[in-house]
Image 1 (cartoon, rainbow, N blue to C red):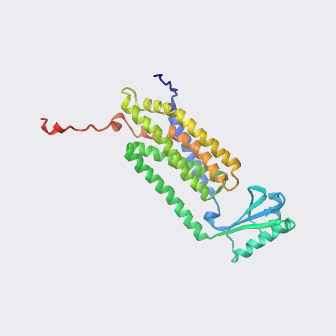
Image 2 (tube, helix red, strand yellow):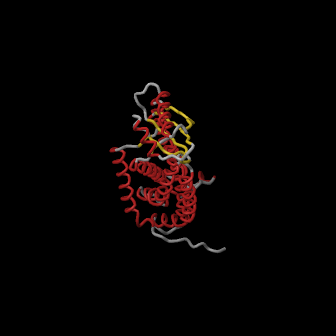
Image 3 (cartoon, one colour):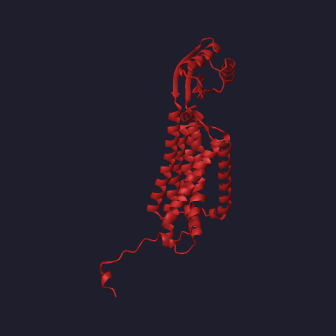
Length: 311
């Protein structure tokens, strides 16, 4: 049987630099969230969504100018699928008749397009629904983290559990910071992608931790850092292939999936990069810093039937 030669890179030698780097990222995230917050979509803030189709390709700047000339400000205009389809997001306002406001917006765009426009969809999200979605979304993230903590603690050991939670929380915070810093719209699709990132990051971490547990029991010599390094090296090919495949898929989704999936795929791109990084430098590092050792992962010896007869 041919022996497999794994790479022997010293990942753990960069663990302190990685912690400083992650600390800087998290600090920037908290500052950005405190100063400018998230650019919440209508799913959370409430408002009106209008989809309009045109017979000819449109220019966003011209449509925005027509709306502003008609006294309709604060409306987000973007292409939806093609240059002939436009999606408009109207934030909550003092208007009591949302149907009248939607009709006014459509009439303005229709006049700018010489009547060659078609009103395809109008949706209204109330502010109360937005508040409920915000609360439920936060609870979903919290419950997922608690579930991860319990699962990894039961399957491995509490130090690994805290390492896995630290990695998943790190990835969620980094993704939030990216959307806050660059003010990309944060809607339900992005929230769903953050939950997906948490699951992806956990899966990657579990694979490494499985190999760590196996090597702790198999290798008699070597410090925890040495065993962590060897385990990461042995699983690196799997990590690169998995992360690379997912990355190519979400990039294709970002480029060709349309405006509706743009935020979802962008969050996944950030999450895949952060998840791969955190598996190596956060999850394993936290377990080492908490003092995990070979004795913590050794199976408990079973006592035989003659144990009571021993002196």
